[in-house]
Image (cartoon, rainbow, N blue to C red; front, side, top):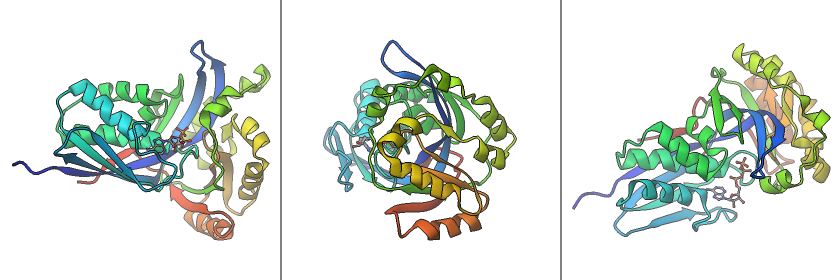
Length: 296
Ligand code: ATP
């Protein structure tokens, strides 16, 4: 009998260096302009073939569902539907990315499972098909499949890769407030005049690897509705912004994670020591050049 194969995959989180809402669509979604950046904070996914049929999810994080609503489950089923006749799978998720935190943890897991099943079962599904399947699972899944640094339009799913940034250190703070992305977008009432912020300046800074310029031009329109509901996030941003060696600070996605771009690792470590006893989740991380890494 053939041995059941196993694969370990790293699923990387993202932050948004820029996020603007540029219009509402007929389908209820919003059109965005965003600059995505992968960071080296990651979940681990262990993918195993099983004798029995079906997909089984294991995850010990209390807020992550282990049923069909898990995005990793959706990803596995989508591949099974598109290929057909493949054997059962067990997906174990070791969660390190905070949940519902604006870091695309669920999307990263889905992207890892799409890449992983393709590799584990030698299916040779082309990247373009994985991207199409990913887009149906969630707006951030296509970016998580590609990773690195990208400019996103549409609902964030139309991607133009940008040149990779060098190792840039970041501090991430998550105070444990969970923010529902769909609630924030549903209640988004942004005056037209506020939509003018242009992405071209920060994209130019990324092209030139100008980290000081990136720090000055960090922008996220969703801070307006999220900070008005959770003023403590605005305070965290202020405290991070005023540390020695901070080049800029911003909320990622729809929150509640706030990050600071630091001038060097020394400043990042000093800043982390300053905040680590105040917040449950306060880490130093850095840019990462891809979204999914297969370990063996
Ligand atoms: P985004 O930045 O893409 O909006 P997020 O980081 O804010 O995502 P996630 O961590 O993906 O949010 O979690 C959003 C919701 O999805 C949570 O309420 C969680 O219960 C659910 N969920 C489903 N599958 C997963 C998964 N594999 N990992 C984390 N959360 C998941």
